[in-house]
Amino acid sequence: MAKRSFLLSKVYGLLEPGPVVLLTTARKGAANVMTMSWHTMMEFVPPLVGCVISSRDFSFDALKATRQCVLNIPTAEMAVKVVGCGNTSGRRVDKFTAFGLTPEPASLVGAPLIAECYANLECRVVDTRLVNRYNFFVLEVLKAWIDPACKDPRTLHHRGRGVFSVAGETIKLPSKMK
Amino acid sequence: MAKRSFLLSKVYGLLEPGPVVLLTTARKGAANVMTMSWHTMMEFVPPLVGCVISSRDFSFDALKATRQCVLNIPTAEMAVKVVGCGNTSGRRVDKFTAFGLTPEPASLVGAPLIAECYANLECRVVDTRLVNRYNFFVLEVLKAWIDPACKDPRTLHHRGRGVFSVAGETIKLPSKMK
Image (tube, rainbow over the protein chains, first blue to last red):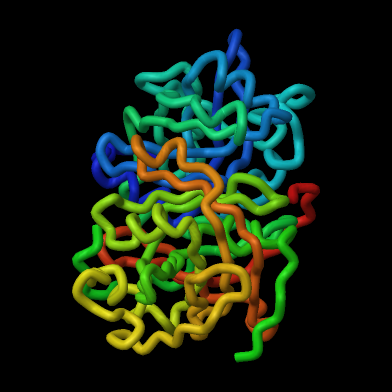
């Protein structure tokens, strides 16, 4: 898949619909990936993303220490890998190998992109004020990549306990909303 | 539509997929409604929700002053109303009348439920530390209502400028994830 750089001002349109994402980190030479649904856009430009990562997750310490990560957006074809990553811990498993995910170097951060995902957002942590109380990190998206062939991505939307809605029909209404 | 009380411990499954919601407030006898996509779950029990509401929105002042609101979750049949609410301001328009939305009294907060939405979450503001910097409020869901007939809701997921993905196919994979 040949990815293109994607305008930062359009990143909100990727995360605002609430897709499950795969968050990658790298620390001391070891990359990890976790499944995450608790995120929201917080600003258009520069794109800011708030997200909750449990302090029990292996990725929590890596993100806190390195302050860098990548948000990778999978589509429905990757559902088994997404659930697999959510059901294992990087403490015990190399999830890239276990689930057939291909790490690729990012341009601005130490964490890897996941090649199989249709979009990848390189991020740094910019605010940790709510980390102690809510495990809530504010990220700034520094660089975005997208597969230009993927026009209406069949993103995954978790409804709990392995049940997902897959993004279906696309509708367009006249709107002044950004 | 006869709604039932819904377990607070299951509320995350309604908001985690990232649906557009209609946020209602009430201040000085006047109710208002706005369209919102920038929200995330932050805790399972009690259910906490983080959300960004622009300080330019009429609802911002009402929420800040009353510290109460309702998150109402619409389905695709309501798309025209959802976009209408996003393109008008409560400063000038009574959106309930303009878009044919039916306000119903909530049980624990002053803001109304929207009868046409398949789920309604009565909330109070519990943290305002990130309001000045990001317009980010932390809400606690106090009471939840759902239409028990709506099993696979065709929720709306905004991708920007009036383009929405409608929740389509439901898939279920074996998972230990909550």
